[in-house]
Length: 236
Image (tube, rainbow, N blue to C red; front, side, top):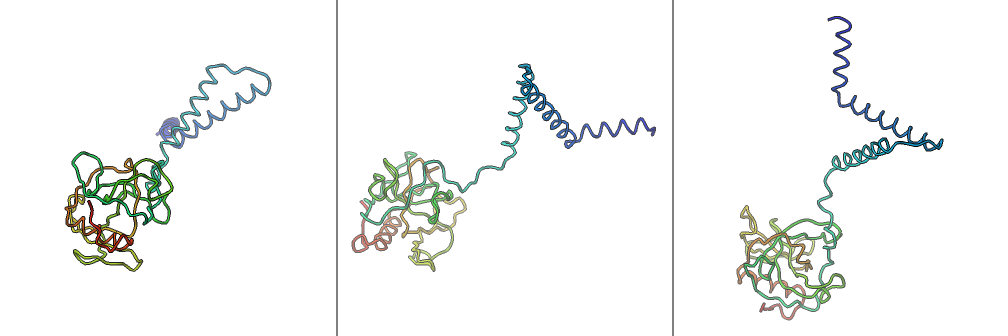
């Protein structure tokens, strides 16, 4: 191959190279910025077309950086949704009222954003069992309007089937078996010592309903842990 052909091939390869194209763009941007700076410093004028071109270039760079950035932290709290846990007193007005209305109701397992216990600005989506609905200020100092009092679920094995147990961290769990809220049909356990307060808007979707016998078992365990009477609390 002749020298001229080799040079031509090298130039074409360089033009196709992303690195070469980026270098050329950067050089163009620097030159445009220098022209603008020099014109302003000497009292000169920059044409509207040149000024608009530079603004478009800067805007394009901003979009490129934004689109190349990784997605936001999935553990970050959705805006204005994280609430502190509920106090044990006064006792919540637990009821069993599941309804196929698309809204989270007591007795239903729903999916929602649950804050971590040690840092409510972070958390994860997980299934919860709704125990009650009440005004936000009944059991907490933050939030307003109606909130859900709920208990988190896990598919990790914490206690014997159908039983109630306390783990090494002092958390109390009630085994409720499986249900339609878990697509894999895994048995679930409910943590009854931690009372969640969730805004209805934090709920993603309904997962299913717990039958009355299992719901009553969970309510009685929660009553015993939080000192609501003698532990024989019966939902309405």
